[in-house]
Length: 291
Image 1 (spheres, helix red, strand yellow):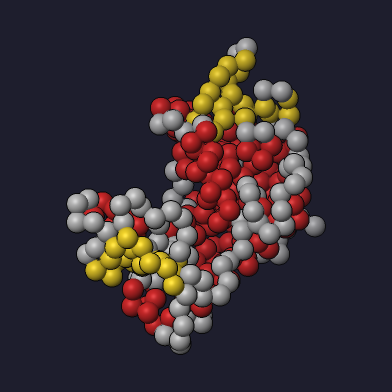
Image 2: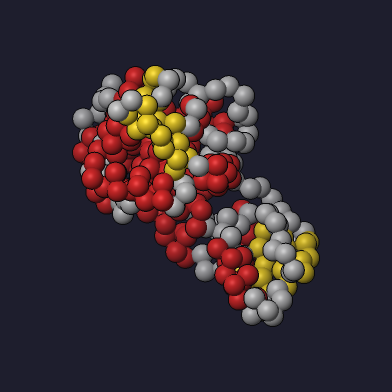
């Protein structure tokens, strides 16, 4: 049965989050629109953003800026404007979606040491740090072996052995802000755990805020393998809560999408296409298939 506490708790979450309209719209596309063909009427964007307190004026300004930045592409059909993610933005979100919806990395994994050239080394180091690498020396970085190695660099890969991996990680990365972000996520969204929304609109708003907040915490985290993290790492509890809430909210949220989201060819389907694996690969991963 619907929980009367759900709506006020959802309002508290929306008011507490530092929501930027442009970033939230990208979340909306990635979670709800892209798996259903990728295009939607701007009126749907405005209506959905209003449920989390983002005004029509902010939406229209954000959409214009996303178009100017090459992240959205728009066209008109009659008097209506429709938008889709650009090819570049779609590729970026697909890569992020495999992380957002997928499982945690197991085991110690392979690690990569990257030696940078002196010319342009600082800019390359900044790029590696954004990808979760740690700076060991001015021109030497280390991180889990994922993604391409920057051109012109020297790299070594190895599998760690011995009991000191967590100690090495603690000395190389400042994990405190990431742990704090996960604890805040659990505290904030734990208020919705076990509570049922009264409407599909509430369910979708909650799911979008959930994905948006999880995305921000997770993609800023270097995402070290569990073997390199403290035993009490809060990211595990945050991931479990994310998966649990996503599945609980999805039936009502997907029904709302099927009833209210308009594309150029009519209403978008409530169900996402089949063929996305249970292992969390591709946009939405197993979550969208098992919700």
